[in-house]
Amino acid sequence: MEDNTERPVLLSGIQPTGRLMIGNYLGAIKNWVAMQKDHDCLFMLVDLHAITVPQDPAELRTRCLDVLAQFIACGVDPVKQTVFAQSHVPAHAELTWILTCTATMGELSRMTQYKDKVQKHAGPASAGLFCYPVLMAADILLYRTDIVPIGDDQRQHLELTRDLAERFNARYGEIFRLPRAHHPSVGARIMSLKDPTRKMDKSSPDPESYIALLDNPDAVARKISRAVTDSDGRVALDPARPGIANLVAIYMAVTGLPSAEVETRFTGKGYAEFKRELTDVLVALLEPIQAHYRTYREDSAGLTTILRRGAGLAGDRAEAMLRQVRQAVGFLDE
Image 1 (cartoon, rainbow, N blue to C red):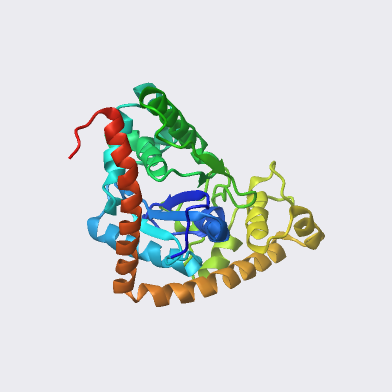
Image 2 (cartoon, rainbow, N blue to C red):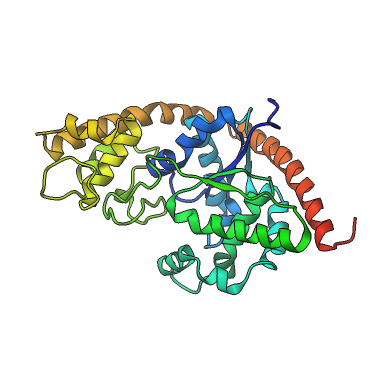
């Protein structure tokens, strides 16, 4: 294990629900892998977040191992970094309660993601769905996190995290470090293939709206060929034309080419040719990930060992922070 004490602490996670998709890879996992060398990284399966809406228990357990295998297949290093399931570290839940007593109803009611998720799910919303931004704050603050890679839709939650940390510190002393956001320049917000005004969502009931990391080449070709564009025919990163702009953003994120070079490359060529080449670069990206995934996923015991090791490392760090918090708020020593 490398000495991580001098490197900035980076924390991020993904819910083990739905199917991981290129939005998760290009907007998050690809950046995790690039930042591993220079950061002390903690990567979570955020299964506590997942149960804010009903989950099938057996499927949730399976999804956790599926997602872990995909993390590793994409390049996350479980030996040099800390990879764990959120529910395996009880300190997350305890700090959430303490911070919930610091948050206000007004703050939580203003969270736009809560409003969006309430609209997506039938039936009454759980109190957990209302309070989960506090759980996110606890995740971050437990590890003295310096950097949190986030998309635009998570800005509000990180602002709440900083507000809660500042309020707690003002009341009890300097306990928490204030985290800062990291926004990837390309691929931070990949949009739906069917409705490019909405973010690509791995939990969408319409699988044609996203490219899953485990989609085969035929599925990738079909989904890209049917992706929404327009009648202009010009390949460009044009915000006024969100369909083609989204596909260009995906192409840029996969190839690393700037928008001007992409537009020059496809000048005078139609959407059909662009979509064929986009399909080719996506298939080339996904094939090695899928091959590695199959190898790792077959070793369930090995994946369980990774999570057990990660929980031990994360738990030690989280408990050290929680001891400071308990003492600060006035709880009795054990």
